[in-house]
Length: 183
Image (cartoon, rainbow, N blue to C red; front, top):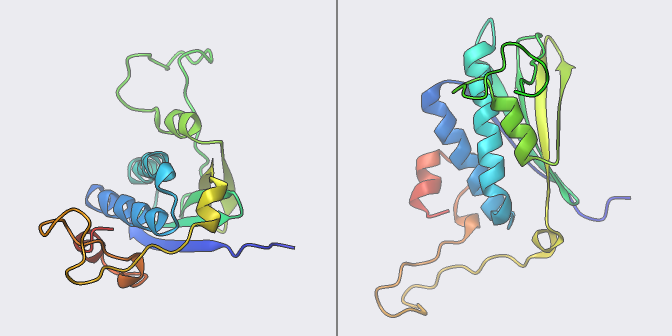
């Protein structure tokens, strides 16, 4: 029996350079809302690498779905695309003659492997899903809701920035709304 509800976010996007930063901000905003601030850097880096791989390698199109799910103490981030070809990981020490220790590209999955607890790829429909997991601290699962801002109430004097509550931003709000709300 699962005692904690899962938390889930899905974003459909074209894996274009201009969209990757937006998805990174959406993922970061959800992790803040779920009180998983400690995972933001690794999750944002991992999703950036996976979306970059879709942009560079996926055919026939760049459409994909990014899914972020927190279940108990495990955060799973996955990117589903329509290309059935499975990716490979290149390391300088695996005997691959093409692996160059000074390469400036081709390290996406090695980076995902380095920052995550586990990762993998599975066929999904006509395409595939590439995923990675991060361990979620237990504190994040029981953290109380963040307080709402009260007009005129500050702790740092009259010019302190107001704190915005995450529930002020509706699910699916444009990235600009999330950024403007300070989340």
